[in-house]
Image (cartoon, rainbow over all chains, first blue to last red; front, side, top):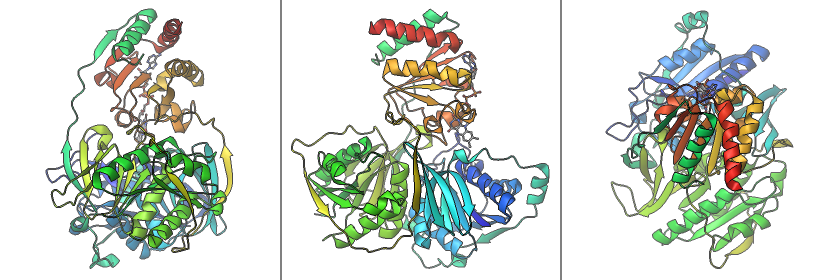
Length: 258
Length: 334
Ligand SMILES: Cc1cc2nc3c(=O)[nH]c(=O)nc-3n(C[C@H](O)[C@H](O)[C@H](O)COP(=O)(O)OP(=O)(O)OC[C@H]3O[C@@H](n4cnc5c(N)ncnc54)[C@H](O)[C@@H]3O)c2cc1C
């Protein structure tokens, strides 16, 4: 089974900030988006059980390879990094076009993506990628199970879960319930150094003259500000239980919540 | 007059309109009034009539699209195909869509974005209509609170079209004085999207109010100690008219369902009151709840990070505080 996992390097959660140009400052240390690690783990388990290989596909600035090396160290076979100066400031529509175009140059049975990204990404890209490629789209998965020629997915619903089936190739979006991602082993880390990260420009994936990238963004940031800081909190240390309870009740009353 | 604003209503497992759909309709109506645009509601469902009538409480015109295949097919591709067909048949293509920031809404937005070639702004916390500025035409201005609310941003669409995904509880749903009308509507086929079969729908949870909609959240973490500890938190939530939330540690331990997880890979919430018990306040948890109006934390570790951003931090053993607080609340309720 050949699986492509879409992985996005994101600023370390809690460290994100906007640059003066209103774009995400990518100079802070980057990690693999948390939700992408869950689907990567699922992909690694699938190839362990069924054979095959895992290719990482990422669109990111050229310098940001540490998170991709880490994902390779976890066990992915190779990586494809689409990078182009024109892509700085790309909107989700552009990102969708780029990832779909890159996928057209790869061979796969399954494409996996994380539910959303911690840097403000909204979890709309994978559905668009599936639609552009004409592939079945199965989202919000807590379990992914291939069968002959198809894939079965348990999709979380408001009331429980739905069992979905589609033919392969397909695009599946997964959640944290797929299971805790593994840590790279020392052997994995050593091995990752020699694994291939194939770098592709827009021209190399056939998008040279297409209106994608920052200059063609469909959305624009107009203003950004910091919220008013929270006033410093009140601390009640080691009260007895009744005093603790009445401190909370009084506070709720003060805040007009009771 | 420019292109219309379309609101796609979502239906729950019982076929009823979701609360968030009424909020999206209300937000879209205000947008339409300010921008001089017609606003139309759309419900695509196997039996759309009930939900369409509910949506018409908020909008002058609602199209009810019967899609029997949705009973056996994953929703997004069915709804997207119907909407593209409606857009193709409309006199003027719709300019803006207001959808729900839910898993279904995101799936639909991703598909519509490429099918209609329009941008998406996700996780809106506020919506206004504004004049042209900074190279962006007059149109919706979308407020967001990315990075767990550490920044407040305002964004717009560079073309005169776009899709907005609205988060729950950002707008108070306000019905019209006179409900609108529902029009039954059939569509031709414009795009053929691969369908995904639904083999089975498994219902495991009693569909209570989701934590995203609750005004009060009583959250538990590893410090709660086990599934039994959550019984006490459920009682508190009941007394406060709220819902129970959890940290990932509690979810990973299997003490409570993933649907209650708050944080980076769980839900983002903005309740009036967030009461945390035995939650340390790790950054991945904090990003999901730090925009709560009031944060109260009980933790026995005086150095727990949550103490740095709680409005009231009670340093105590929760095992004793939970029953005492329940007793105090019961006493108040008389
Ligand atoms: C990619 C990624 C995504 C993540 N996403 C999320 C997410 O969405 N949501 C999330 O919550 N976490 C998430 N995490 C995990 C996060 O980093 C923390 O591990 C988690 O939030 C810790 O949960 P906790 O606060 O319940 O546990 P702990 O950090 O173990 O805190 C337990 C607290 O309980 C206190 N305590 C213990 N016993 C008592 C007692 N008897 N009385 C009072 N206090 C007591 C302790 O002092 C401590 O402060 C994510 C991590 C990663 C890497």
